Image (cartoon, rainbow over all chains, first blue to last red):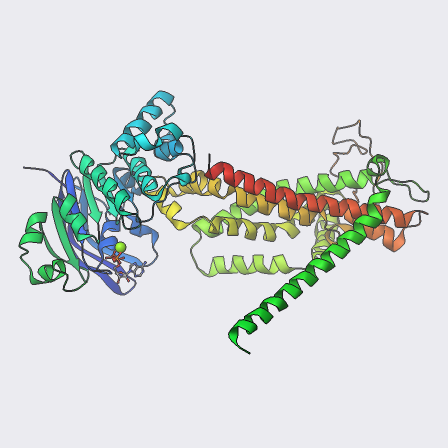
Length: 252
Length: 294
Ligand SMILES: Nc1ncnc2c1ncn2[C@@H]1O[C@H](COP(=O)(O)OP(=O)(O)OP(=O)(O)O)[C@@H](O)[C@H]1O
Ligand SMILES: [Mg+2]
């Protein structure tokens, strides 16, 4: 029996008066990939961003309910958001490397945390870039700007950057929607590599992508979680009519 | 008239206007340089001025201009940087920040002669700093601060929010994100803003006439003890700058070669400001390249 690493209970989120999440109950086991799917505007990103408190940055957001990470309340008054985001990393839709070298991008988190040992940093850079499956492409120009890379390479460097601070959970919000098919499948391969070591939660509009990589899939609609199950059940025989309609392309 | 001809006419009109502006600018520059450059010589650039005789130079004024500029920048840059970071990265939109922004807005459109008058009443008279480099530097700070704050704020604005999210999502604190990601990324653009504002400060006269004063006592360039009255570094001495010098010669200069000195000074001033502008572009671009490519 696997441990539950992250649990959300009766989670509501309001942007001002507008209720964007209407009581979500969803738990995540340790390791493996969960895909969040659903029509545009249904609250997938909103939900994902509550999981590492990125919504704190938006004014007028009210959140009720409980989110627990390894048993401790993520929104407790004394919770340390900086520490939380180290343990729950995030990759965005638009690749957002810092305008520095590839090497610096990857070790940024560690270096700021005070790590100075050059050998250790070198090792982390190589390990993270290998894990993100981009090492071979960038190993000869680690000290060149990350902005000179292609979008797909940039995105994998961003994944490496997250891996370098050794998080337990990685959140990805449509990480391939700005990329070409080849880069997308490289990212998918990367994620499949990582699924044994990390808990991965990915938002995607690409149903094939969800079916290819996710162990579990959750279907959201209008701020509600409609159904969550093993991916093959969701796609082959969904329990809910709305899920079925969405999967078969009847709306959304 | 169909839309194609309309388009052509519009473009032609715009080219005409732009060309006219460029022409005026070139004529102005040409006039200043043609009448001024022949006056320039090493002697002119380094010798102290003479009040009644021919052959004075602008060495002291030139030094004063740079010294004042550096002092004013040293005072105003940290303040402007702090203010801009606070306003753009931290401040929430509320009445307080709106007030601060409005104040900056108003300050930046204040005529510099008013800033000079305030400097005179406050620093020179009230704080007993007299006509001095220090009074001048404070006045220039007041003149420069709002412009610089806005320019740095604009530089911060050019850094996309995905960078901020990227930093925070990596477990950096707000301050770490600002100081280690956003600021380095904004450096080229901040630097450009600083140099451009340096150009403005360098050419400023009205704010200085009643603060740094209109006299340029001869300096002893062998004496670098800031406490000696003839030391170039002494911040309490009156210090006429190049821009003030031009104004002064033209309004009450009595040396026989006043016209020549005024033309020469103008040329120096214009060349210095052009250099500032080119340096700003060049350094900004280079730094940006350094940061973003190999
Ligand atoms: N900052 C915000 N302020 C106000 N409303 C917001 C904000 N962000 C999102 N919303 C609203 O909350 C709802 C959910 O948005 P969210 O971005 O989570 O949807 P999504 O499922 O990620 O959509 P997409 O697939 O298009 O990315 C939408 O109706 C959206 O308009
Ligand atoms: Mg979204």
